[in-house]
Image (cartoon, rainbow, N blue to C red):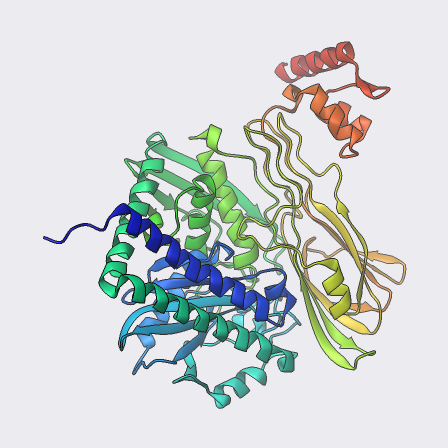
Length: 581
């Protein structure tokens, strides 16, 4: 009988596989042309099992939303792959084959060791444009997927290490700023080549059989760890809900209705009572829906390593007949960046009823997708600029939410102002914390950001796919909701607000016009009247709230830079009595 792998070797191999993915992340970011990849880090790299495409390891700097979707897209490639040889590389972005939106383009490569297929290496990069109705691909009122851009099934872009120029020409002929895309394509392919070299070194050192054994053991242990965490949740059924502002076409909210049943050491997720499929691009493909639940649970239990075993105890019933199970030709451009975060918010709301000490109020929950494309008359070159922005995190039992944090679905950061102004005819006129946007609570929500950008020259079209413009992020246990998303465009001295508040497309922008965005703050946690008055004084001193807001939100009366204790106690007591009555 073979001896089990010793713990030290197992740990070293685990970290070795993680390092392979991390180095792919770094290589991709450092060599990519587009700021959305090189600066914002909207990308991910991973290793996937040779048979079923199950996740083996993922880079620490990769977006969590890609955890589940890259498994599914790799499976789609495996199902269609024929006559594999070293150097082959597939490209795919079809959202219905394990994807997200069309701008997230996946490269999937078979990895051979000593002449035999050992695993698959894959990565995802957000391309600034993929064709479609509007620059940047974020069509806010598309009614079918063809309006969103070029859809690619799994095809070999590289054959025996040589790029297929005919397939490349088809891609380049269907996207904007095609001359700038080749840099991202080569960077994406090169990252997988780095992974090949590093993974070969791991296998050379420990041997194929030992690494295979470690992969099986690591998966089993991840499943055991997740089940141990789930065991902390009392058995029962817990409900949560969240709302998408609208689908961009029909100005009505979309409801995410979630039931979580905890039984033993497993969780069962039911989304079947959510809104039906919608006309606009807020439909979610099932791969993104599943991945949203995976990442939400990982937020709750962050110390569990990520591989396919992590998600074995999570059972998700396919929500057929809802907008969370999109089928062709439903448009889906908002699924990964926006709907996914509403799904996570519903998970948080449901589990907060079961394990309140481990949960938190809702975070900002929007990526703030803003794309602008046009012709720069100074350089005589077309451009597509894509911006995303942070927001406030929710308050939690241990303290206030952080401000200007990344979105729930990833660790992407806002592209530096200097890079945007250098690359595009855009000027930032404001970039600051959005005071007062954090939801009031015993621990308050973090703050969103206020920013304004002016088009310096030429003309352009701007598109927005954001959310939480109608509903602010949910407070928890008596905490107030965070401030909602605000969007407006100043044109010729007039202020334009989109009919759908945070969604619009192809808005004409001329030189001198300004786009204003205020991102949501996080929800508050607990009764605002129980917040420490000294913390309220600190927030007012720092300019987060004014004196009137302190009295209105927290019941704290301030004068001459200090707390009026008697007036505060009286105010809070009166308000408590009024609420009881």
